[in-house]
Figure 1: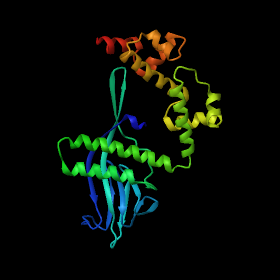
Figure 2: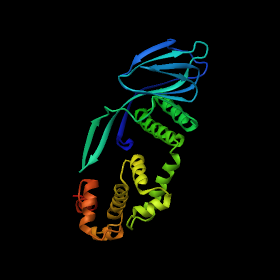
Figure 3: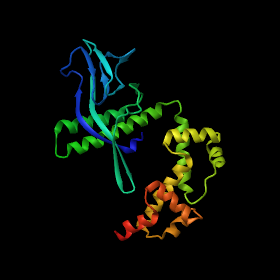
Figure 4: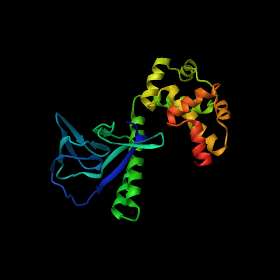
Length: 276
């Protein structure tokens, strides 16, 4: 699953602020049909999944998956304050000029219970999300979808920052920066390893787990993105583009382009420059 391919639908949003009326029972038992994110901003209680019980308090993010039974015990004197969004999603891909849509039957790669250390930005996005949903101004459906996507991106970022492997993630970003600066050159894995002081095999593994691409696959993706820019904006010929991006073989460049885009660079040029 890649977050860039997810398209969301928001079913509802809600919030309970400190001092607000509690419209829920002190004990809740549920099995959801859809996905739900709950961000706790105050109060006390517990959430119980099969074979596991967690304390819930300020700064806890809950990801409740479809078809998983859970129960919540809410503290009588200090009930939860929270933001909640209930949503579904599909995977949307685009290949060979065709949209490919598959239902999101898998769950997001998030922990059921996550304790956040720095959640100012997440809290801010949740506030905007619930406000847009509540006000129901024209276009609110689109705005809430966009804010939900921002929210999930921020959750991923927060998870990465809190990870003990965060320093390794920064090294991956350093490799990507090097790629962008050397887009017309050939990559040598040994040089990249020395740049970030990691072994070649370990670097290859962490790069794939972080980006979803192999090192060469990601570098080729950057090259193809740049190639599309050169073709459309600079009206460059395919041979020129290949040379600018460091390909000595125009036909090899064309194979890489088609593998990533689903169409040849010549076809891409014809459709986007000449419009037929």
